[in-house]
Length: 359
Image (tube, rainbow, N blue to C red; front, side, top):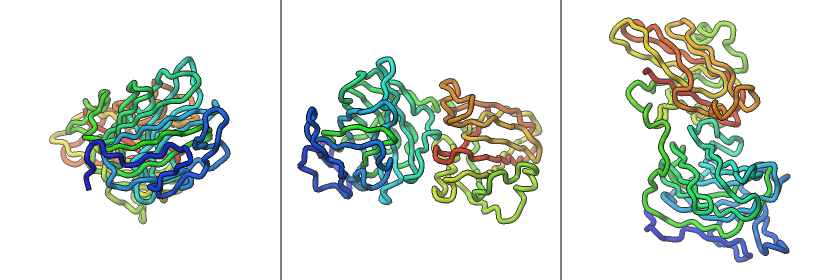
């Protein structure tokens, strides 16, 4: 089913006249002395779950989501889920920091594979600061397409979210420790969504990207730390082929959100063919902590990258996947070459994955 541009798919002003289109109606409607009837998402309540409200279905594709949000505290995040799937948990997400520093507020985009994670590490450039008032209502507009979404704040563009993990679906409200008021929610069908900002992965999408990966099951913490090559040859590794995204990123948590959303070790294996014996430069990026072997020999041992690790900074992409962050020289032999990866997943709630290409 295709909705004509301009069709109002959903609307709720949160003024007491609740829309009958809610699949799950949000329950925290209050009367504020200053702002009147509003929806109140409160710190201390669950950060996720059906109680936050859910509307729409997989016929919602290419739509404009508009809403006003008033942050009430300085410690947390508020936002919206979009392209929510039929299980009401897997979705795309946009959120912002409730605190405004120096007239700017941090906005982020990410994927979620169930209610237990916010996989913000998998986005390439999904964190931008935008000038906003220190106090007062924020007028948000999100134009959501099948592969990209554009965010506007107060009519000004903030950023483009590329490589959305889901192409269509409903909407849901979201919070993470922060508190805020919501009002004037509206969803309208639009035509195709074109990106408004450049794709930083655009120059690295060529034929050198390694895409033919298989991954193991999620193994216990520390597995294979002493003898990784021997460990990778063990029985019952549960090898399965994985589908990489447009960039060639192996999204580990997307293979099975239940099995892979925990701390542990994942091995991955791929074959690279070389017409001759030669040294070849490869570039890579990863979450958590990653090591690489070529034909049984160690070629890369990455530092741990995470929320609480010293290297996390804006220059580091805040621990996210960024193209060509790291490099290694691989002594390829003529014919097939086996690349073995060991990923130690330390922060499963923020998404796990890696990417590699030959230069």
